[in-house]
Image 1 (cartoon, one colour):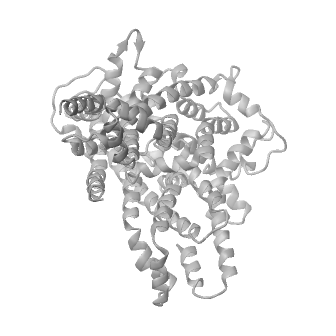
Image 2 (cartoon, chains in turn brown, orange):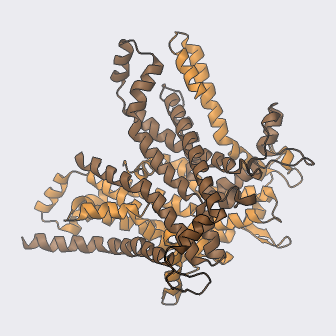
Image 3 (cartoon, one colour):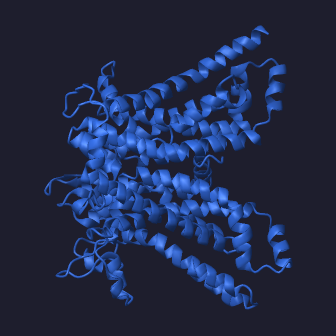
Length: 299
Length: 299
């Protein structure tokens, strides 16, 4: 009995540095940021005079922030839909006993190992539209070469579709992830199930619609949440690929936060943006965490 | 979606060979899409300065020239920009210790949470996990303030590699703990009971039973941490402001954001930045995948 309690104490001592570190650096700091967002701190030197929610009120009335929120929605929708569709199509095709499957899989997945900064630098040149005097470059030049010149566009230099260009680069980087998740899911579906449906006369389309897709739903949910929270936080790619763009065409809250806090010294406003970002991510993640932990406990 | 349904509709009818051809054509087309930026990266970096031309981006280099790499690595005093060599080494000095400390710490946390559960550990675990999803913007302002005040034995933490190591180790706790906890949960409790009967205590069990079985767990965690720390930009850009102490992602972003740096030099720099994590992916891709899956909580 004595030995038991001795080891209990030791086990708690061993875990406590991590618990204390997270308590301070995650929860304490979030609290600090939340407090900062309620103050008047608007220059380099801190000013902790409380002003209530006025920073939030001003922010939601701020044109740049409104554009940022709209960009985030557009970006998230484009990015999620293209990752889910491309990921599922690739996984489904790879699941057809493909020769060289390992090579294809590695090729689809390698961009995940690269920094968003590298991706941004490369795609900035690939989607560089060129100019009338000098001619087309990058993808536009490629379109010219294969006779698809009518597809040429200004990409990220066009304020209307700028954020779409960023979503293309992000999809290039992350769609391998959904492919890998779906492929693992497809491999977990027993072949008997599809065979039984075939015997019953179901077509392949029906099998996909009524058996495969419903069984893959938990994976779709995981992918939406993981990619969704990445998309809300997207920052590096914007920095290296486009910056905020003309008329904030490719600006996002995470970029605005950094810009206004560390360049503009509007600390309270930056803190308010950070807290809004955190709330958006938490709305997505907290139910998912609870669900993950609960399903794990049932096992 | 169209390719998918087209393929499926065909599958009703017998001509299997035709169907296989379409399958491979789609797979190869996607492979080309994912490899296209790599082609431009490598081809551009190998061109001589005379050959470099935005309009002829897609042409193969006429020979092997390493001038772009030399310039990206060493910089150019004449043109007045810094090379990436210092930044590359900074990233090495940052990533190697941070990865090792993270992995050791995560292993201990995972051991306690998997094998020495205490009252409240089931509540603690999700609270810990939440830390890996937060947008780091929400802790950035306090982090900078705290790092500015830390000065241990003359080592400054703000603006330096030790500060970055601290940030990455602390914010790496959730993911490393998660991977190790799931890994150790799969090790049978009988092994531990047997060791207890043989008189091993909490340290002995870790040292003689779990640690020797941990190699795959360590590989997964170290690859994950290596990749995310090497690729990080947000912490690096916020904590280090002097070029001489900045990691390579910040160095590359500065290089690419400068109007005096030729784009082939930027491309060479991008490849230098991507190379370490790419090599890890190429040689240890299997373990990279496992970390990825753990990141979506389904370890």
